[in-house]
Image 1 (cartoon, rainbow, N blue to C red):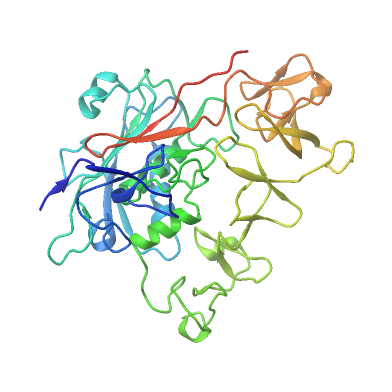
Image 2 (cartoon, rainbow, N blue to C red):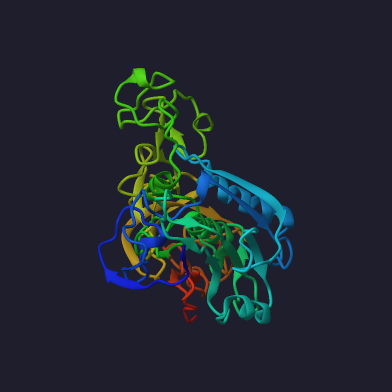
Length: 424
C-alpha cells in the first residue's frame, strides 16, 4: 500500500460544512486532494479502531508555562474532540514523548522546540511566523479497509526566539500579541485526528484563516469529527432517532437525536448545553450562549443579548447592546462603540466593563477614562483620557491577527501568522 506524503491535485471548489485531510482547503479557498479517489464520510482519513495514543513532551516549554498546565491543556484539547457527544473515540496519553517527527510510527509525539537548529532539522523550513506543525501520513483505502488509514501523527509547537510568540494558555480576553496555546493545539489535533480546513475566515475552529478567539470545536467541526468516529449504538445519547421509544432515555430531541433531561450544563457532557426552555441537552446549534460567548447564525445569544461582530475574521460575540446616553448599562459598565481587530469602527454599541489602574483590559473591557486611564499592552495605565474612546483603542499591537494554514510538501500542516503591527 502507498503512504500518502504529498498532495498531487489542486482544484477550486466551494467550501463545505466540514472537510478532511483528503479534501482540505487552503487560505485561498483552493481544495488540496490526494490520489486515493473519492474523499467522503466513508473514505476519509482516520485512525483505525477509533482509538489513538499520544505522548507529550515536557521539555523546552515557553516561559511561564508549567509542565502540569501544558500536559493538562493537551489532554483537555483531545477531550474536546473525543468527548464530544455522538463521538466514539478513545485517546490515551502514554507519557513522555520521544521527540520523533515523522520517523517513528509507533510513537505519536507532541512537543515543543525552542531552538532554530532543531526546528530546521525536523521541519525543513525556518521557524519565523510558524506556530506549529502537524505531520499525519496515511494509507489509501485497500482491500477490506475502505477508508484512508492514518499511520502516524506528530505535532511540534514553535518555542524558538525566531518565532517571537507571546504564548499564553488562552487568549479569551483578546490580549494584544497573545498566541493561544489552546486554540493552536486544539486546531492541530483536529488534523491529528483526520480533519482538514473547512472554510476561510469563518468562526469554525478548523478554518484555514482563524481567530485565537475560537478555542474549541464549533458545530461544523463537531459534525466532522462525528463523521469520522461515529457513535452508532442505537438508542444511545446523541444517536439518531425519530420517536422517543427508540432512545434509551425515552427522549428524542426535535432535531432527531436521542438526548437527556437536564438542570445544568454539567448534565450534558462537554459539547452539549442544557436548554433553559426545554430542560433537555442540546447541541450548540440549538442552544444559546451567554455574555461575551461566541455566537453565529446557528448559535444564538441568551435572551436580552445581541450577537455583534467585533473581529476582522468574522467572529461574533454576545453583548448587552446599548444606546449612548440611555443609561441602560450597569454601574460598573459604560456604553462604548466597538472596533474590529483591524481598528475600524463598527455600527454597534455595547455595555463594556470598566477596569481600574493595573487591571487587564481589551476589546471586551475598557479602562476608566474619568481617571485618565487608557488600555496599554492589555493593562489599564495612566495616560491622557479621551472622551468616548472606542473600545480596544489602547496599545500599539494589532490583536486577533489571522492565522494562515498552509501545507508542506510532505503533508505537514503549518499555522502561519503574518507579523503585522500598528504604528503608535
